[in-house]
Length: 215
Image 1 (cartoon, helix red, strand yellow):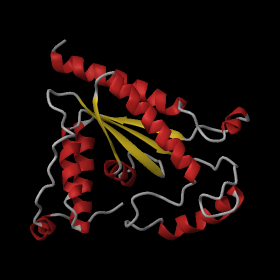
Image 2: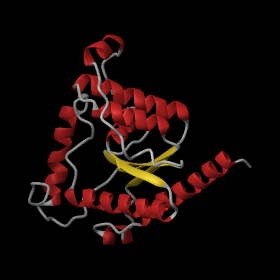
Image 3: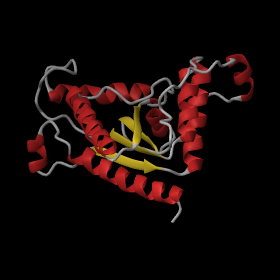
Image 4: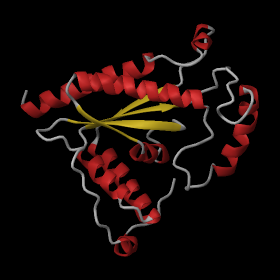
């Protein structure tokens, strides 16, 4: 086994451990799981170059549409990744705490009104993620991502938590989550996530060759 294959096998193993950490991380309303509620943390591992390239293309299309170079920076990073673990909220439900952080006084009211807004924006490409989302579930997602990132760090894998590539994955159907974070991973002599300069992009020239982004 050559060095590169050793790295890839290790990455796959660590990514699996990170996915487990995300699922087992503490969550709001744990009593719901005791009653038989289904898990709502989605984990998807992607390492195929073709898929990473497709994600990068979507990012560049979005960057051209918004005229924001940061999307091109993330696209360049996406093409250099060895692996990415997407962690998101899919088929989730409120924890029945009635905390009011979402803007509604009860979880029942939130559940009643949220679908209407989702239908209004379902066909819009302006939205990166599907909201509104329970604030406690957002906290749960953050804890899950942090738990996964901890495992990657313990195993000396270079990582970066990213949202734009997760938006690309959602729009391309790579993941089903309404909201997600990408734990991007790389093994190299130099951490690819640091010292990334913002690229200079001639948006008018790019727009001539790039079709508009779509879902």
